[in-house]
Amino acid sequence: MASPFLRLRRHLNAYRPAPLPVAHKLGLSISLLIIGCVALLGLVIINQQSRLLHEQMDGFGQAMVEQLAATSRELVLADDSLALNALIINLAGSPRVMGAAVYHRDGQPLARAGLVPEHPDQSVTAPHHPQVAGYAGDILFQDVQLGSAVVTLSQAEQHTAVRHAVTAIALSTLIISLLAGIAAFLMGKHMSRPIDQLMLATRAIGAGDYHYRLETRRRDEIGQLMTAFNRMARGLEEKSQVEGALSRYVSVGVARKIMSNLDQLELGGHQVEASVLFADIAGFTSLSEQLPPDQVARLLNEYFSYVSRIAHCYRGTIDKFLGDGVMVVFGVTEEDPDHRFHAIACGVMLQRLVSRLNRIRVAAGQLPVRFRVGVNSGLMLAGNMGADDRMQYTVVGDTVNLAARLMGSGDPGQVIIPAALMEDTALARALHTRPHGYLSLRGKEAPVHTCVVEDVGEPHRPLMERHIHGLITGESLS
Image (cartoon, rainbow, N blue to C red; front, side, top):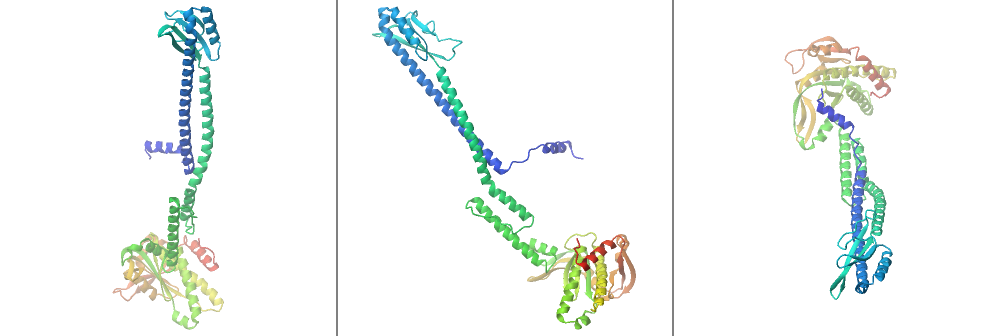
């Protein structure tokens, strides 16, 4: 039972978003980078604009104060309050001026209008007009302070200009970000196209299409990667072609073992528990004397093709062709727990097929062909045998020799096996056999107890019949 942690992890994985394609990642990264740069540039521009407007406002305010102080100097000396009030009222009515005042040096106002402080040293407080800036300057006559001049200016235009600048920059940033996003995703799609092509190519290679190639027009690192991929695909194609050609001379399993261990080809082998079948054409010498050489070759190729397809049905591997005979192994190049039954069933199917074919041959006025079959199972040595410059993957041992002797001692149409194999109760239930007696075989001191396999059990017979029918009619055996 899965732990709570694993169950929680699987539950969270179910809600994990699907991974983003590389094109989207590139587009998103470039977009965020451009948006960040544009936003930072906008902040810098706004800060510069605000500072510039503030400096202009301060310069304008100081100029107004200096002008008011110079104009009111003589009026203060003459104590002309009427002209002074007229000056202040006229100045307070100017654009952007919220108020103006002239103060005596003791702080008492001599003339004022609009929004001004009660004392020149005080700041302007106006709850209804928060955007106000005050500027003050001394009224001097021969370095003697006569009083102070104060001018208050509205900052509304400054704030409005800043807002307009922020709005314009924000809109510009939005438009640029949108255009940059579209351009970034198009650029990301273009940049990731070679990666998509590589993904398609790897899927094709994984599916066995070694002819797939990439068009390499780029001269950058991706182009070098595509070139390397094409070289790899070409190497795999050549290896597949060599393996395909090699499998025509040796079994597919042996060909794969050879191709996967090209650097470790050496003589030697290992012990395996497997089965071996020998079959040859009885009376082949007499038969070949009655037929032209080309017909003999066609006959051998026809029947060896049947043997190869029957062996394939029962997971067998053609080890070698021996003149008019053939050697088939089971459970050697690939693991097969039922190799005993498969080897014997292969022999039974061969004899039943040959019997059917002989009826067709006799009806057509041709000579019948009969096979002898011997099967044995047990320990044997499997590996590369021969010389350093010429080797063959095969099996050797007493088990193999006995199978060959059993074939040679049998009659045409028989499948001979050692009776000791019938000690396996599961195998005995799957076969119909009869005793064949004790045979004195060359290389064996004691006679070997043998039996003849007449047929397979009922559960296996329908499948065998379908295979035989398919071989005769040329239908697929899958």
